[in-house]
Every structure is written in C-alpha cells, then in structure tokens.
Image (cartoon, rainbow, N blue to C red; front, side, top):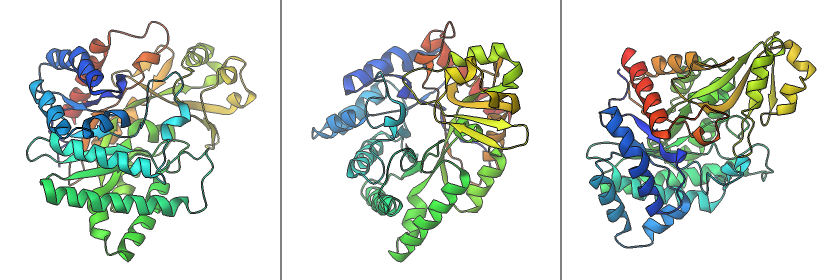
Length: 388
C-alpha cells in the first residue's frame, strides 16, 4: 500500500481562533500564503473550538456558509482536530486541554457538532477523520465507572456517525489520540480499552458499527516520548483490529547523556513554558524509565542526581518536522521516519497531518515567520513521504 495521496494536511490549532471570523482571518493570513509558497494543494486540518462549532450550528445556513467560505479560498479539509475543546491559546492550558473528558456529555455533543460540520467540508468521495482526547487525564480524579461511561458515549457517537453517513453519504471516523500521562497513553492501554469497547459493542449488536467508525490517531511524538518501539506499536494496533484513522506527523525533543551535556540541559530548560504541558520521560542506563509530569527547569539546571544514570530524556514538545537537531539537543526524527515507513505497510491509508502547534512558545531566536516555518516543515514532510 502507498501512503495517503490526499494533499498533506497541517493542523490549524497553531492559530488562535474562537469565532468563524477569526478562523477565516487566520486562513487568509497564514494558510493561503503557505499554500502559495508550497506551490501545491494543501489541506487545512481545522481546529474548530466549541465556541466556533456552536456559532456555525446556531444559524440554519451556518454550515453551508462556512463550507462555501472554504471553497472560495480553494482550501481542502478532510480532518478536524477536536482534541482542544476550548481556548487552546489561553495563558495557561496545561492539563485543562483534556477537559471535558469522554464521560461528559459536552465532549460527545461537541464531537457530534464537529462531524456535522466536517460532513459539509469533505471533498466528494473523500472520507473524514476527527481526532480526540484519549478519554481523559490520569492526574484527575475519575468515578469508578469512568471507563464504562466513556465506552457508552463512544458507542453513541459511533451510532451517530453511521446515521450521518446514511443521511449525507459521507464517512467520518473518530480517532482517539494516546498521549503521555493520559488514561490511554501506551499502546497496550489502547488495545485493552478497545477490547472492552468491542465487547460492550458486541453486547449491543453494534460491533460492526464501532469497528467502522471508532479508531485511533497515532501521534508519533507521543509514542516516541514513551520510548515505545514505533514499528512494533503500529503493528500491534493493527493486529488488534484497531483502525488507525489519522497520523500526526510530529517530532519530540531528545537529550542524550544529560548529566554530561550541560549545554543541552541549559537549552532544554528554556523549553519549559507556562502554556502547554510538556511531559518528560527519562530512560536510565539499565533500561528503566521514569516520568515527570511537566518539564522542570530546576531538575535540569540544578541537576538532579537521577540524571547521572539517565541515558536520554524525551520531552513532549512538538518541534518542527524538519528539525533533526536543535543545537545541542536532538529530536525523534528517526522515529518519525520509522513510523511513516511502517504505516506504508497498512492495507489502507490513514490521513497524514503535520501538527506542530508550539511555534508561539519556541524559546529564544528559534521563531521564523510562521508562514516560512510551516512551509519549510511541510516541504520536509512531503519529501520524507515521497522518499519512502
């Protein structure tokens, strides 16, 4: 099988926007110039926060008008990022990005709204995908029946997506995105949860519907931060009959031999910032792993004794796809290549989306113009895909 031949998508969660006017303004300011620089079609992987979806759905012609506005700009959209529900560019996002979780009716209704909008945006004959939170955040308190509540809401969504397909002829699939420190973060947790989901769906005689419409979003940065065997992970998910509906082409930060790399520790400390959560995992020389919920400057600058036995650190900080090094720091670019090569083995073609949302919070002088930076990494992603 070949990798997806649709225009490469980039996720617009990099741009603030809580109204349709703001969304369209950012498309004009950034997306259209990027497409012009690329010289080839570009897909906008839209992030439409809950207030935007509510605005679009509040008017009888809201969906049709928004679809027409995208068509006027000659922009393709086949995937939405429905992971961030509210303001993804507030002063402090951190663990709040996982709210509401998948037990909350607000999460279900928001995702249904996203699907209604996406059904009108899809090009003829193209299927759609919507990425979403991995149920919730492990650091929050959850009811004892949390997992079952999530199962029931996901089954309800699957039934809705089947009804939407019957009504519109458009197929849209959910893509649950594992992430470090979340309820689903490891490959084995994804597989165990889907076994439970499939069992409950079978009891309701809805197994076929759930298999068709509920799957995974594989964020390469996230699984690399977990030090997972990337090709093995993708193959395990496939063997478990979980459809990977979307791939996030994304790069994490890596610091080798942190105890003896003072320059690397100093630079990595600059990536600690107040907006997003930067889960950090260390690999010890004996192969064990340890975990830090958020990148800690003091841990690096007043070096913790544990760093003496640390072979490498990996940090959930999305850095540009074209970056193989960042001064004294490395990246998980190797894992990125491994993932795409393995995805090529599948007998279907998941959607491919570049997701570097952290341009605004990159430290120091690393910020090129956003149009130039995004263009460069999209060019690099396309070159990498074409080389496989």
